[in-house]
Image 1 (cartoon, rainbow, N blue to C red):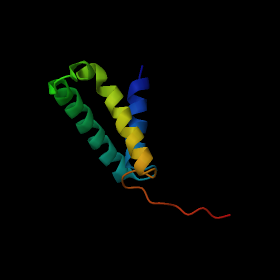
Image 2: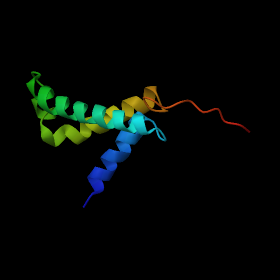
Image 3: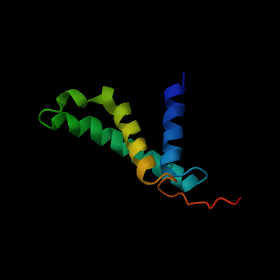
Amino acid sequence: MGFLMGLKAFTAAVLGGIGNIYGAMLGGVVLGIAETLASAYIDEIPGMNQLGGQSWANVWAFCLLILVLLFRPQGLLGERVADRA
């Protein structure tokens, strides 16, 4: 029953940085704002109306996750940890 909620919570934690409570909160806020703006405004762009709306909000949330993981793998507020051999 709570699979999608758990998936979004995990996404918010990864966005903010694993192990950082404030980062997870920031990730949740960023995720919520991104979903809302994407579902509201992508529908208004000419030629993009089939990619907007509430049914595409989850897709845009995970696209945001992929972008953050590509450019900043430790998360928004995460710190880079040095590996010791």
